[in-house]
Length: 114
Image (tube, rainbow, N blue to C red):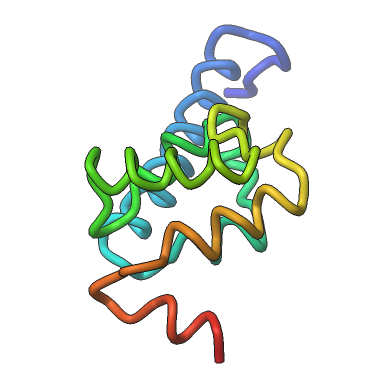
């Protein structure tokens, strides 16, 4: 049976694909398979409409306390973490990649700086 473009079934299938892609990215960040630096340096389309705050919270080893510390540094450096990934400029994405990994127990900061 063919699905008509723009039909409720086609829209539901597309929505399911988007939700699955977001879940894959979120799971990869949570397990450490994907780092914040990976996401910031090569933004995934699935996370484009998520704020930088949300993406940082998805990452392994970062909770609300670390996010608050990161936000304090961001404010000092005039970086807006409330912007979506797709609207973040290159400077902001590089700043998040470098600063979110600082003090990482996984040694990600050292790997990024090599």
